[in-house]
Length: 149
Length: 149
DNA sequence: TTTTATTCAGAACAATTTGTCTGAATATGA
DNA sequence: TCATATTCAGACAAATTGTTCTGAATAAAA
Image 1: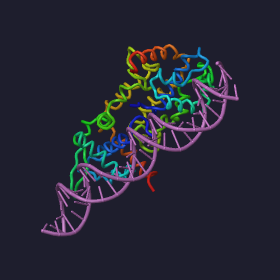
Image 2 (image 1 turned 60 degrees about the vertical axis):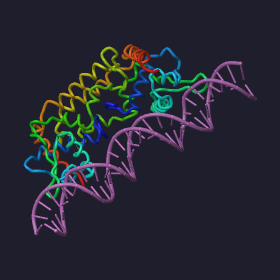
Image 3 (image 1 turned 180 degrees about the horizontal axis):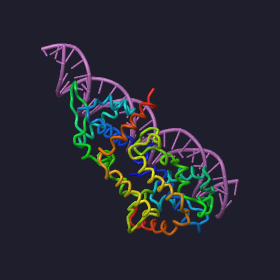
Image 4 (image 1 turned 30 degrees about the vertical axis):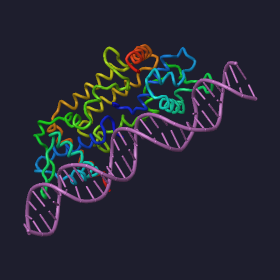
């Protein structure tokens, strides 16, 4: 069940939060990320590759390889990951699916939804990844406790 | 591009709004709805059937057949259509896709998203269909103007 | 140089969602 | 009663999204 982001995007957000919360490591192997987040390894690997193409993370090949953020956590915002994977379409499409929904031809819930959308955008844009470190670590701990077999 | 609802749900909402805005008609034929809303006829027909099973609309077969609301517009809220088609999962799933996201084990954006989610739910629950009549009629007019070939 | 462990790249596969087709059941009016 | 126009039901097809597989390129260490 995805809420507003695709699964790809959800996993991408989780993985980037994970990397930000583990900056003390030089790089993190993809199978570690997959295991800790309980995501299929090959899938998260694909997602990380595409985030690399977008310049959000970088990778090191070979025996001591892995992934790491391309910038400091204080320089990255969640919206960047959303934009790279799902795009910003959800922030200017009609929630009821009507075509050409705009102030001249608003849908029945145009104004109310517009406010929520703006707040959602702010939520994803305002804080940088470093602000999420503690909350991410807590959350990941709770996954490995209840999570896998 | 869907925002938070599936296409099925978007079309269902549009169709129900359409029926509510055209209560003067006894019933409306599915091909009229499809044409006015610019939705594939067979698809909207399927969606209307399922809304009928949920008791939100009713149908009349045969030559003078068509669809109509099962209750007065003042008795129907948008959330009922959402619940019937997509379910209420989006209102209690984690926006980042983390498992077991709850106050004890919140995800990094749990609180902020929780507020938005509550407001979205309110938006869909508070007003009844009759309140949307004018806005729906306006919007439908703008579709047939710009819309199909 | 060889072995080993990793990312990389792309194809192949699977599941879900979206959309289409066909024919039967039903109701109206000539 | 018969012709016509509609919903109904379910199978089918296409598109999108999600997932897995396979093998190559790369880098480190023995």
